[in-house]
Image (cartoon, rainbow, N blue to C red; front, side, top):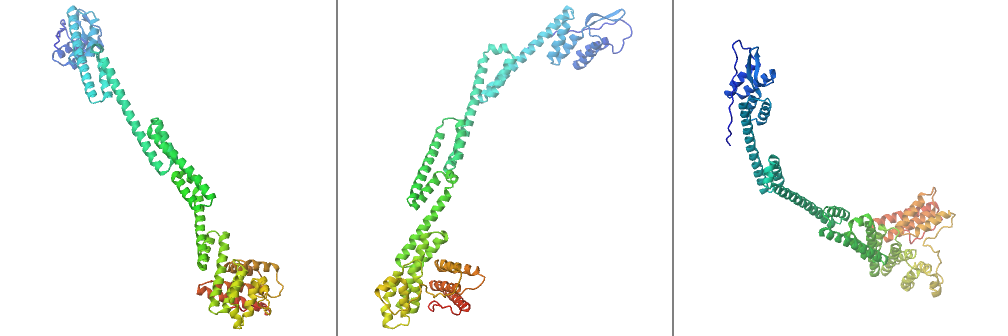
Length: 524
């Protein structure tokens, strides 16, 4: 756009006489020459200095007593700033000069400059306006709606009239709506991603049985996006686990009450798989371990019973020993172990008698008679099988044999009158000396002998250790306990050690009381 600019030159007219250096009129005159030479910043500096000395414009400004000059510094400042492109400053000074009532020609020049500034500013506004719209359109095409809003808003601030004229308010609204939609979509995607991550974590925890953590994760997911099917599906699976846990626990309880231990253990395992956290919290592992031990014990008891039925008495004793190590108070195992030892002694007696080793067979039958696990009638019947052979051969132990039979079943022995002349013996296999001893020792000895041989040995050791002096009867019965243990064991080394111990205790009993009578059948 071409703007016609009126050039106005003010000529400083001075009458003759010397010039005062750097006075306002001198500076003013120098500024005029700077403007003509295009030295606008130098001109501005000199004009500002002149104004500081004389701020008032006019056509007849007195210099000396008889001399005047035309002085319009604000116009020249406006002109200098115009050429420097500083239109706001130029406008300010031109307006200030127009208020000084300048001559008509100068007023026209001021108006021309003001119009030129207006035209320039208008062009600049339109250029900025168009650039803003172009930037907004480019950003909108890229989908950067937030970036597109700012240029449109800037265009409105730049030229509101043009903005309204072009109907750009709708464009601004459209861009704003697009940005809101973009933000909303981005937020939706962010929530969806966070939701899916929570559901994924919850699914993993549910498969691991960590239902507490699963519940927390699903709660967060539901708060993020309510009423989603994925959350409901996982909650249904958790509910199903809870129901499976309850059902398995009820089944386990019923099976345990009815003695179906293996089934109860299986139900507890199902409960653990359904809800590991509740299984742990309710300490059901302890119950499961207890039932497992019970099932193991029952299995071994059944195995021991099978060994008894098949005549494997030694294996049965070993099986019941395992049970008693796990459950020392198991009365069934104690009873069946005693029964197995009893039958083992009977079988041993039969074996020895069949081999014509009647003294050793007598010892086995005598030990069987004192064993807790059998009945005297059974010993009697076994020994009766071999009585004819003992009578026919006039065995020296015949009377001892019949005496053990008498002690095993006195009523039947008396009824059958097997040996009127048989020498009667006391009920014990060892004749006890008629010596005075504490009643407590007798009770302790009897209690010890009622136990299994190895336990009897340990108990009698404790009784001996608790006494200050010796006792022949106590030493004698300790020897009997070792003798019984040596007979029952199959370990040659242990058998020999028990025999040595039995011999030592028998000798000690005789040392304490030479009148003490020992049963030769039990002395190694």
